[in-house]
Length: 92
Image 1 (tube, rainbow, N blue to C red):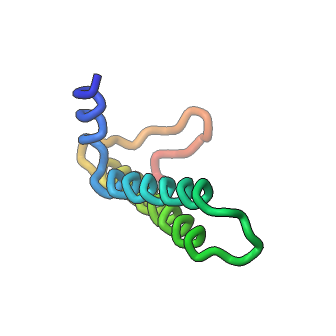
Image 2 (cartoon, one colour):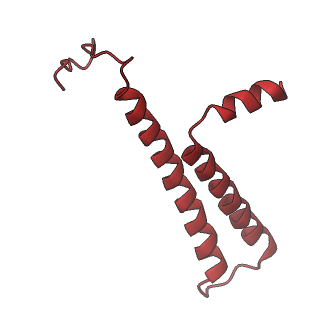
């Protein structure tokens, strides 16, 4: 099972894997911040940075997905086809 997961994750684009790691660190920091602090009305820089790191992780993950999709789309193996539901022609 662990070998299958490692193989699957290893096939993902590097930027996507980096984004998921940054996202996990930001998410962990956010959870720890909310668990370990007492709620107050004052703005909290710790919460801001945790949310910012999480957002950066999301953006990196999306960039990894989209750039990998663009590379695959431009490869010689891909062929243009009509989309049956959306009625998108091959020229698009």
